[in-house]
Length: 618
Ligand SMILES: [Zn+2]
View: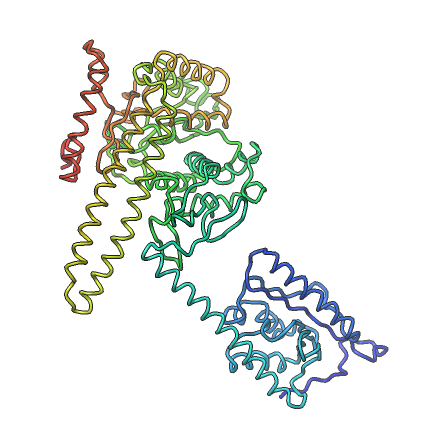
C-alpha cells in the first residue's frame, strides 16, 4: 500500500511547517424532489459538515468544491457517474491536494454497494492518498485512513449494514410496485386515495380526484377545463407560448405558481394521462382515469408539435402566425392539411427589365403538405397565399368568404352552448367506459395467450367472457363515435340570423384591426376551429406551376367537411345543403333527411370497415 507522507508540503515556502489539509463535503439525498424532508436532510448534512470543520481546525474546506448527489441511489449509478466517482477521477488525475478528507454523514450515504464493491471503492480513496470521515454514529467524525487498528473490520460491517438496508428497502419498494401492477391490470383502483382541497398527490394528475366510495376518478371541473383549454392552445402554439399566455392572464397552477413550459409538457402535453392512461413502470394502463381529450386530439397536438419542430421559426413568440387557417385548410385532392411557406426573392423593380434595380420581395405560398413532404399527393403545385407585389391576398379572400357564408342556416338552436357541453361530457364518458373495457379485454387476451403458451386448453368461461367484453366494447365504441358526430352537428347550430351578424362583425373587426397582430391571429384561428367550418383548397394539378402565372388555377371553398367514418380523413365538403339551397328546397327537411341517411351509411360502413359514401380507393 502506498504510504502517504503526512508532512509533505504543497507550498514551496519553508515557513509552512504544518501542512493545511483540505476537506470536501459530500451530501446525498435519494430523490430529486424538493420535498421538505429532503430539504431538511440537505440542511442537516450541511450543518454536520460545518460542525466537523470546527472540530477539526487542521482542515480547511476546499473552496468551490462540494459534492452533491441529489436523486442518486447509493448503488451502481453513483459509483459510475455520481459525485463519488468524480472524487475518485479527480484524485486519479492529481487534481486534489494530498490527504483530502471526504466528509459525509454515514456509510450508507457514501456507498450502498455490496460489501466487496463497496470496499474496493473505499480502498481506492485510501490508495490515492486521501481519507474520509463520517459525522454520525460511533465514527464521531474521526478521520479514517485505513491504517487504524481493526478499522477494516469495522468498515466492512458498516458497508454490509448499508448494503443490506438498501436491499431491504428496494425489496419493499419492489413488492409495493408489484402489487400496484397486479391491481392496475385488474383495474382494481382501491389503493388510490382521495385528496383534500389543494393537496398534492403525485399518484395521479392534478385535475383529478379519487372517489373512495365509488373507487373511481372524477375530473375537478376547474382544472379539467383548464387542461382542456391548454390542449386546444397546443394545436397552434408551443409550451413556451402557452405558459406566457397563461401568466399574462394570471392563471396559476395547483401550487399557486405560474405554469412553466416544462411542467406543461411533462404534466399535460406529452403526458398520456390526458387520455386516461396511467403509466406504471413504463407500462401503460388504459381506462384508469376519465380522459380529458380524445386520442384524435392528442394525435393533432403531437403532429402540431412536430410541425413546429420541423419549422423552428414558428417557435419565436412574437412572430406572426403565417397560416391563419392552420389546421382548417385542406387539400381537395388528398384531404391532407395545407401549409403556408414564407419566401424571399430578388426581383427587378420594374418587370421586363433584366439588368435594372433589384429589390427583395417577400411572399407567401400555400401548398399541400403531403405533396411536398411525403409525396403521397399529386397536387405538387403551390398557390399564392399573400403576394403583395402582385396584389394577391388570398387570406383576405377566404376571410370574406367566411363572412359571407350562409351562417344563419347552421345556427338554429339557442340552447346551443349548454347542449354542446352535455354532448362533450357524454363523449368523454363513453370514451372512458370504452377504455376501461379495452383494458379488461387486453387482460383477458393475455390470460388466453398464457393458456396457449403452456399448452393448456383455454377454458370456455374465458372465451365467453372475452366475447361478452368485446360486445360491450363495440357498443361503447359506437356510442363514442356517435357522440363525436353529434358534437360536430351541434357546433354547426347556433342562433340563426344573429349568429351571422355576430360572425360578420367578428371577421370585419379582425380584418380591420387585428389581422397583423400575431396573437390576435392565433385567437382567431381557435375561434374558427370552434365554429366547425373548414376551407378546402383546390390547386389544379398541371405541369406548370400556378404560382408562376397570375391566372393560376386554384380556388378556395368553405363549408362543412365530410370526414370518413372509418379513417377520419377529410373526403370533401358537404355539398348537399348547397345544392338544396340552390334548388330552393326546405333546408330543415333536407338536413333531417340527411341525418337519417348518414346514420344508415355509417352503420353499413362500420360493418364493412370502409366508408361506403365514397368510391373505393384503387
Ligand atoms: Zn394533397
